[in-house]
Length: 392
Image 1 (cartoon, rainbow, N blue to C red):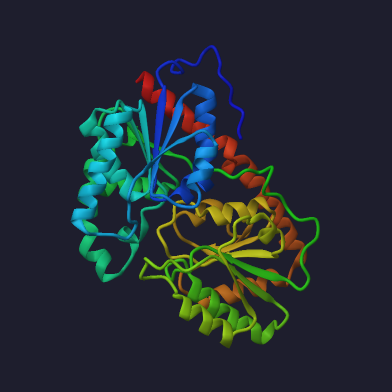
Image 2 (image 1 turned 135 degrees about the horizontal axis):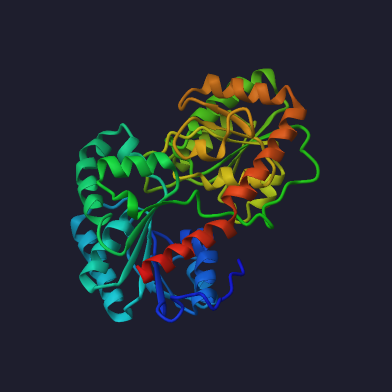
């Protein structure tokens, strides 16, 4: 936990008595935002509320001293009745608990959390969009149909007095200002959710034979098929190179590989190792030579790339919003165009040819995380936003 402490100059400790966090899963709040909530609790003496669906991480949030309120949010759902019930549930919780500040994460939480907060007169609002998603940059038929609706909802949600909107990369910030009418004065750029650099540290010995690692949900938009195609090409010329995939299928996402797909791919390509969902990723990163994420998804800043860089791994990712924030081409890794498996395979070959360069890139990536993406830095900036809102 980041030790921030309470100082005599803290003007809002007496006003931030309750802070609510609203997200689409208990997994997200526990893995990505629990340190922020702990720091807010310590700094302001605030009671922390978590609004999210029930799940295996809920008891862990409660064990930290946070109050949990079940919120039946379906990430991929579009049923208007279910959405109306979600809005009413959030309103009910806010009406009963009266938080001083509501911090929403992910698109649905931003839309309905904002609407509920305004209806219930919540004093301060923070909306965090960790990537504009395939709704804005995707080319699917569904995306094209619902894009105008989502834009309209977001345009109304991302404006208003005593609100801040946090973006993770400048591309998303500029897009929101241009297309959603976000006031630049209310926008903030905080790159990622922060990584614990004391926990994510480099391994002492590199694996032999080398290991290429993919981390993420098994979505076509995340580049899993591009990774598999590149692996097919590389296996012919580098048979000792191992390919590990840490991540699970997302049954509710039409872009996801299904369990049957994974079984078929595994049986036909034994050089691919599917690890499934991994609880503690540190050892997985330490057992890899480099990290690969050929995503075409609307990322904020991919957490997996930051964690891998903190563990001293060179990175290969797409020249894409969010990835450009953490992968500096030729410095701590290489960037390639999305959906280009040949270019990806070539970049991996280039990296494998020079072991000294791999070491140098790993060091550069670790330094970048320490200076720009540490958990301490992200929390410090976020808590300052809370202060600014409460005195503004």
